[in-house]
Image 1 (cartoon, rainbow over the protein chains, first blue to last red):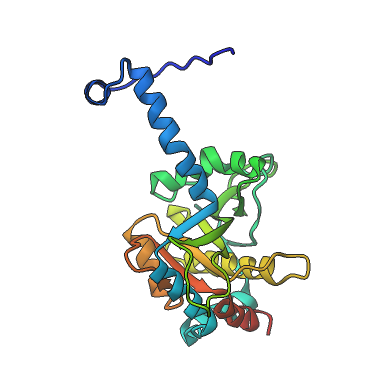
Image 2: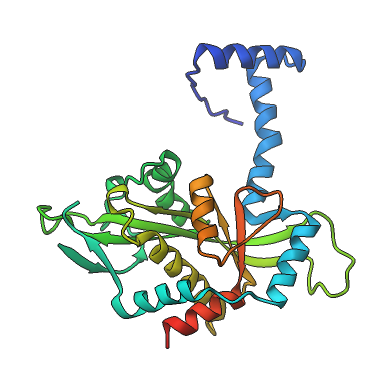
Amino acid sequence: MKAARFEMQWDDETRLLAERAATLSGHTSLKAYVTQLIRENAPKVISNYEHLQITNENFSRFVAACENPPKPSSKLLNKVKVLATEGIWVETKI
Amino acid sequence: MKQKSEFVPLNPSRINVKSFDCGKKPINDYLHRYAVKNMGLGINSTFVLPYQKEGDFVDAKFRVAAFYTLANQTLTPESIPTEKKLPRYQAPIVLVAWLGVNASHQKQGLGINTLITALLHAHAISTSPNGIPSLGVVVDAIDQDAYDFYLATELFIAFEGEPKKLFVPMESISELAKEYFK
């Protein structure tokens, strides 16, 4: 398999931090350490994109609110009304 | 002078995304570098409010006064609840992933109009005969300013222990849609 090559520029502080962490976590190289970080973190980030995990209490709050949806304030409804009648106008000098 | 405009899907051949500056780097970076790419990947969709600045060439690309990004997401509880009244253990929602107003266009009511447009849009997707239903809209506030902005609408409900995320049931947005289409 052909390996892709990336060059990275790190500031001294980040590099020292990475080297220390790599050594302490028993990795033989920075590459091994960074690879492990990506393998650990990437699936989480990708799954977070599709799933928003919340506590059971928050999920219950959400379902309860959907069953008993709060009414918007008259102030907000008025803004909706203005938007419906006037549309959106944008200043063009700036 | 003012120009009437409306939100349209981001089309990079007609829109100059680099013109946008809301004063917050992550939001600027998102529109400048990732919005078009993510749309191409089918991850989410960005909608912009275009305008032409006085003095720009007539055939110049439009500038961006404001934008928002919508994505489909699923709310998932940490563990599957045992309460019977819960209809399902996952809830489809629309996420307002990004929302920004050009710095020089702020404090003119554009923020709230952008938010209302985004909410009505999510509602339209959810209630259209050709759409896909979702139970609510979640917003991802980038900082305290954004969080306060959403709270000030008196529409959003905070998730406890989530300092960045708020939600509103789709049924509440139906009330806004009723008012809009009255």
